[in-house]
Image 1 (cartoon, rainbow, N blue to C red):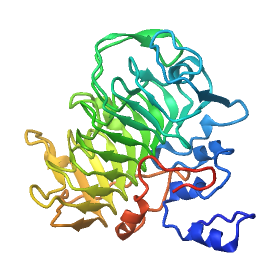
Image 2 (image 1 turned 60 degrees about the vertical axis):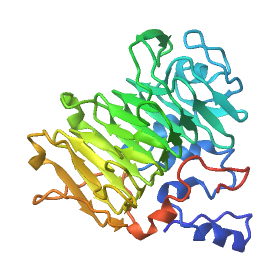
Image 3 (image 1 turned 135 degrees about the vertical axis):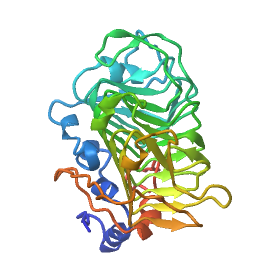
Image 4 (image 1 turned 90 degrees about the horizontal axis):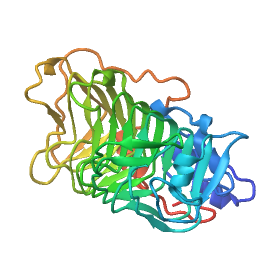
Length: 373
């Protein structure tokens, strides 16, 4: 275990920090009482397929503060979220001056090398359009609440390269990735949207989804656009330290074509199923805690009934813990496909008996000027 020793703290306070059962991502930055002045330290903490997000920091980093919660989807005003996320190009680290509820007029298309960092305040993106990562790379979304997202009719909107572009119909997802890569979605709280909470589609890959709280939702997470979109065979996604539930129905995740490593997550019940898919996906479920609902379906997995290739799927459960009668139908025979992480992506998957501790602070963190709890 890695410990932080902060010189001006008493031994008792250091011991208290070190004794916290926090996961490897949070352990990288949360014990630092200077986190507000060293926000960019966060970019060195990501693991999984997104890898380290060091392309988002450096001497050329632009610090941008949102002070205005209004939105204009075509001519964004300075000091608004859309101006920082779509107009300004280069490495941009976005923070917020105060608590705010932002109601977007159209989906927010986030530019490459942008970090949205909601630590220290309560930021809601809610009640209309929400977030889209469209043909962009190297993006961090951290510590915001996204909820009550609604479908959007076709129209024009400021694009991720600072130019107005046409945009077709958009479903009511909280966060949607379209042909995106190297994306880290961490410590957000997502709920009550008209379609799904998180979609990774159309060739998106190298994504880490960590420390989020997904709740009160029918369709939670979709990995892979549709059964016919074969480019998603190259998709690689890490799903780690998330809390699913209460009141989640299905798709935690549903995967098509690609590969997902699902590790150290807490599943607080489901209605239809927790993990499912189609089109020969590969999934390694490792050291998760599955707590089945009191009544109803206790099987974790689902396979599309009319998929003629279902025998070639790879759904494997390794060191998972099952409570309240939960069960996991694994693929018979064959080897468990490994994530094959590079050094900077790799992390230790801990015993599932610690999952409640590792995920107890999933979702938006409560922060003060020194400590994070």
